[in-house]
Amino acid sequence: LNTPQDTMVLTLACGKYRFNKFFDQFGTIGGLPRMLDIGQCNDAYSAIQIASGLQQAFGLKDINQLPLSFVISWFEQKAVAVFLTLLHLGVKNVYLGPQLPAFATPAMLDILVKSYGVKQINNVQADMKTMLARQ
Image (tube, rainbow, N blue to C red):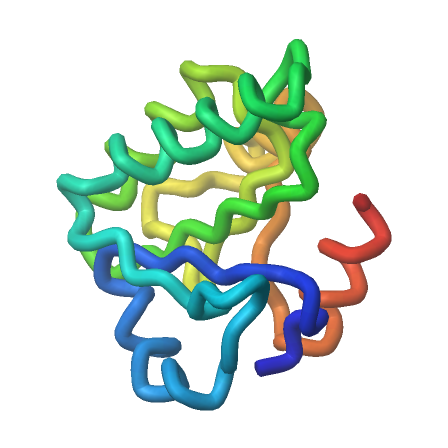
């Protein structure tokens, strides 16, 4: 609900349940619901396809040029596969949290931050400020 009114929220996987209860409160943009549910973890490919389609539609060379934020919540191990897929595809500035996985050592996090711009989610206000500053 703290997202700007001219933005859309696409949810999928376990993390969506934090948002779906607010579906009606997001309203619409251009006649479409501002919040769209894409599906479960195994539907992450659909989200990547949507982002790729937007990249092509806007004639961008890189998906990272889109005003788009990916937030990966660590509720299940499948989130690791989604996160690694995003890194493999070159997606930068992915947000992780609210808790980091146990295998995330300080040295590993340092590499992810320096190489991919990975950030840990904090609280809604701080996260929105960071995401909006990027755009």
